[in-house]
Structure formats: structure tokens, C-alpha cells
Image (cartoon, rainbow, N blue to C red; front, side, top):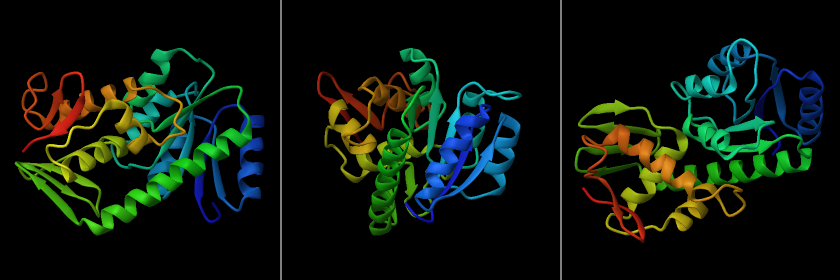
Length: 230
């Protein structure tokens, strides 16, 4: 993971210090922020490979920070949360987070999650380089620029929403089960469950479908999974 650039955001300075020391030992470059405003400023002015973002932050909360980051970047975001309730985890994913880690955590777990996400991002970028663009009906994907368009108008997708749509559009008509999508997009070591897939598909439909309750593009085969139809 050498040469990766990471932003660590937490108001507990001892936690930040520990994470920073451990990541720098692995050759990574680490910036630190201690509140939501500082995190947004750094995220806007720098190119990061991944962001570790605490949920409970002064000034601007972590979920809102994640949501605002998604307006200008698809950088992978791992939420750090002391609250383990399922709704908190799903809420974090709805705001565009890629993963979550519940406090207290082992730094080895943090590094393992970072490695897994970086590996998936590298693989996705390699695949995208082979397919420059994909078209299906009014939907156009610019795989190199990681941008999506509906009838020529750009729409803002999170990294995971883009990856789900890209996979389905690359294989039109092929039905993917929720468990299969979870493994393909989030990886086999992802600790979440299939509700993560449902949340992302719902949000994806809200962005690309004229009537999300009666989707034209991202369809459901009941009892089986999801597929794309132009």
C-alpha cells in the first residue's frame, strides 16, 4: 500500500495519532482532520486514495461530510462508528460510504479493510480501461471518467452505485443474485449483508429511473436478483 494517500478524520486525537503512525509505517502518506469542516476542505483540495471518516464529529457530522464529498468525488470512504446499530451502518452506506468499522477496532483490521478496498478499486479501474464506455437506452457510462449520463445529462453516482450499474450494463439481461452482487462489488471479506445491495439499487433507481417504483433499466427478477434491460 506504499504511496497511497489517506485522510483520517476523527476528533479523538489519540486515535488519529495511532492510525497515522501505523499507516505511515506501511509507506502511506497521511493527512489528518479533527472536525467536519476541516475534513471537507482537505478533501476538496487534495486527491486521496481513501478516507477514514468518524461518524461523530464537531461542526459537521460524519454522514453529512460523506454526503458532501460524494458531490465532487468518488474516493472510497470507510466510516468509523462507535455505534453498532444496523440502521447506523446502513445510513452510512446510503450517504455514499463504501464500508464501516465499529469502534473499538484493531489497527490490523483497519489496514486489512483498506487493502481490500484498494485492491477492488485497482481491479475496477483495470476493467474500466478495457471498456471505455457503455450505452443502454438513454443511459451512457464513461468508464474512464467514472461518469454516468441519462439522455445526455450527467447524474451523480457514488462509487458503489456506479460499479453496480457498470456490472449490470456490461452483462445486459443477466440476473445477479444479491449475494453474488455483494461479493462482486464489495468483496468476499465485506462484513455487511445483502441489505447493502438493496439500499444501493434503490438509490440508483432514484437517480436513473423516470419512475423508480416501476424501473425500466434496473429490473428485479423476483426471488432471484437484479438485471439491466435497455
